[in-house]
Image (cartoon, rainbow, N blue to C red; front, side, top):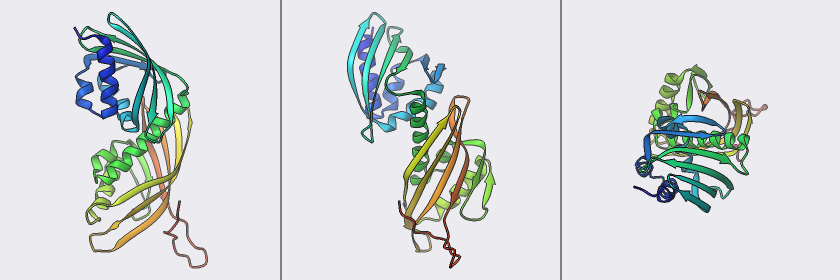
Length: 253
């Protein structure tokens, strides 16, 4: 018999250490998870939707933990990597050995704020995939029929296969690793649709030895599809100097 208080504390510790193996060992195969955004989703769906948020949370501070039998009630404050904090309440149920159900009740965080956090996490995933030169990880963030407007030919293409092909070509054009950052990201959410815009920057050396240090404007549209936020449209562009007719590649955040 595993005391549920121990299971709960180990669960939060796994989130802090980003140890997926540790949390998998704490959850039953028939786990269900509910929140204002989820209705009894499965263990598999939980790892698709919820676990990625661990990458943006650096600490949990348990304020109250009440346990009785196979049930536990927890109030905690979570701290994000950017220093922002929010409070949640969770109700855990175990089968005596592992956690089998979790109910999450948002505290100071609204549904809109939760959606925005998920979209920011989605965008962070694209950044990490680009830095790792992983086209498969990148396309996992896009809807199957995504439409992309690009900076180079082909200037537009549709579908995750095309996005993955274009990304693989871009990744292979770099000599070793390259720096990729997103600045001034703004996100607006309404229902199951969201928009975001940012100034993106890349710095590195191409395979032919040419140094590149440029920025461009990016706009994305996201939709919640089957409970998961995905990018359905992406538009990249650069301003141009009307006198010279040349593109301006040195825009700064």
